[in-house]
Image (cartoon, rainbow, N blue to C red; front, side):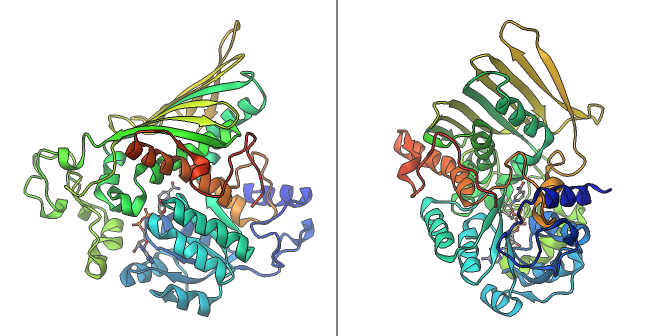
Length: 453
Ligand SMILES: NC(=O)c1ccc[n+]([C@@H]2O[C@H](COP(=O)([O-])OP(=O)(O)OC[C@H]3O[C@@H](n4cnc5c(N)ncnc54)[C@H](O)[C@@H]3O)[C@@H](O)[C@H]2O)c1
């Protein structure tokens, strides 16, 4: 039995619900593993994430459950290419309203640039669709509140795809914490390192502008804040942060607009020849004529206005305190984490960009006070993000899957992850701590709320 069919069967037998529990698409008993009809899905934002994570692989993996009925992108070349690479026959649009009205999707996947998510989430729900949105859900607190209000007004569902929750070693940490292995959790040390390849790439793209990405506090660190919220099982209460731009942008020794037009390529360690990557060339270079977007922008451009080193102290409503940092120009990619409890400590040093494939597991060390340490090795998953991406998609697209680790995230979780980053930005500007409850109508709780989406 395949993993997908096992998930469907086990979930169905447990009588659990779907992405849209009120939808009549699927009956809720085990004999209806074949859906009565396929869910009609549309996508807005057909860039690399849309067409990769949510495109071709979804079309190929879930043909019994879903069908694409529309693709939309502001860039007319990219949306036509998406149709070809995804292998679908649905119509393409550059006008979102037109797509929603003509294609009438039941589910809308939102994979546009971060600062535009809110408009598609809200309008998509108003026009009758449930939403699947990539993190970060949005980039500021006003857009956040508008999304919260729209969900209440329309009664539609919004699922935020926190794929990091699905990596097997992170699930193991969640299990150890929930099992009380280190007693009561009191504090967490969490330090994330982006390397000079992946980290630098954020400074080449639209992510380098606060206006587009909300800064890496929101675009990137919201992944980490969501993990913290999920692991700690409580809501963040206050954030005090520091941040500076010390390495990229204005700090560079020279600069150009982009690598293809740069006179300094022979001296620059960050030279990136996009023309060597046929997929990127087709996705971005061939479509520059429509929107002027340069995927190989210079990492030292003067317009970079995000921080490249960040640190925050976060207090949770249940009293747990967190020391967090993000560095974006590290020689390796990965993170160090320690959970400190009244009866011990959980430690892990996860390298995500290992130089060799010899080590095919992640290791967690469990220290119990006055006892021997235990080494727990978790085999690497086979799909993206340590196997997490495939598990997340199974849970979303296969009917009746269970959620034993409470990984399915809705608007409240999506919001709280972003709000820590938004609070950090505001804290740096104000030079003072920022209370999460001052930002939106969400009131932080000592015990995290869980609602299956
Ligand atoms: N969970 C993860 O690990 C992960 C990884 C990568 C990206 N993402 C998220 O996925 C989203 C897309 O990122 P990407 O790397 O594919 O970026 P991208 O630049 O490749 O794609 C974004 C697409 O959105 C389109 N777009 C922008 N504004 C639009 C508008 N107003 N209307 C319609 N289309 C519009 C662009 O033309 C582009 O095709 C982002 O929110 C990003 O944070 C998540």
